Length: 369
Image 1: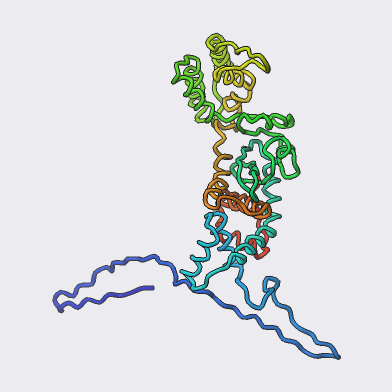
Image 2: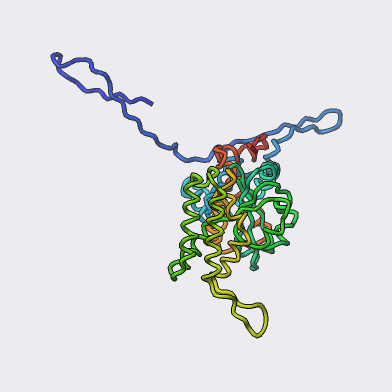
């Protein structure tokens, strides 16, 4: 829309100058659009023949797909509770939603997202490197675990009553199908899979080394410096380091120094001897040397597991806002939709429009490799 501002000058001053333009970007006035559907019936040959309403028009009065998609987007990706979404609709459109409307919107998008989730899982299973992590949360008054497997193109989440091997080997898990590298923390259950290769996250490890070095541990300070130097030499975990064998020998020399510095296990009357924190960390460094140095000799393996931690951050935020999921079904709906929305963002797709296409059963093809 152009708006001309007319300024009057005297005849002697009236020189034609180039116009100056200014633009104002604004949003349209919010309003609900009502579409009326009507079918006709005819009596022919002793029978009544009627037209059919569109598939998505299943009730005398209902919200459309755009409104339902917006509800799901606010609830899942923006983590707004039902009450806030209802208030938002009332403030904008003058209509307050009830909780059941939002629940049904999520339920419908969940069912229609099943094929998208299959595409995500297929892409992750063929990936050279994936990230895995888990976090606990309340579901129906009990502790459950939210597990993720993700890469730069996709994110898959599932909820299970267990954290360890039972969950990771369940039908919902992808780890039994992985053949490339899986980046994770040192949780022992991950190492039960021998069909994939393992790489470990260094973020928490560096924190442990820092704590030991602040207590006067010389070997911990050297190991921390070794990892950080390797990180720089590998171009922040994006390239293979030169002279890897020399770096490996340096790593092993620090472990030998740690073995001399750390006190031997304390013998107890019963059970296994008690190790110091430094000795426990050293045991991990020697046991998982290959997994800890993978980032320096395999180009695709990163230095940290931040990608998986970011994938489950939405679950933690949701838990802080809503405290818990009331039902297991509600948790399952949320994690599928969260995984789908995270994937769409990773692939640079317009989130609202793509979710609307999914709701409208329009084919959506994701990038998997």
